[in-house]
Image (tube, rainbow, N blue to C red):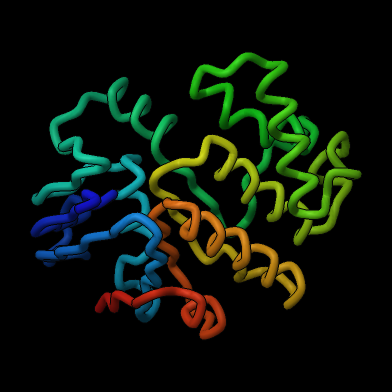
Length: 216
């Protein structure tokens, strides 16, 4: 039996001074080749959950296990290493470096994981070609459309073939064509073996997922 990519047990998170936890007692298991939608009203902790799963912030209580590794007590260097090798993140606003080219932005993910610059850049160009923007590889984010920038952000998240892909409203600012490309990429990552967890309000994105988790 293939082990789960992600196991969350009794997870809780509260901001300092808050009267009640934002997230309380959450259990979640994500298997390889599974795409999960996280849904709920604004303010129910959807984006916070992704930041917890991405090891950017620590839970108040509970356990997060990624590819068999308990992460709760890891120090910052170990969390950063696990994130670099096992986790890809897609933000709603692309979050690309404005002074770097698209290919350099995409290659960044592979460089963090220890690949050489030449290898990382070659992989970035190939991935940009797959998503139809290879001809824009040397342009900066300010020189392409928002949809093209988000496709590049998707490439950056996928370049290391991470076991866990986290996406926060990845199609929220996109037209239907670009949204379809991003959905295709996330679905392809799941079909190739990753676990994908995506926060979304979009029925189209949710419909591409295998199941949904409701917060709030």
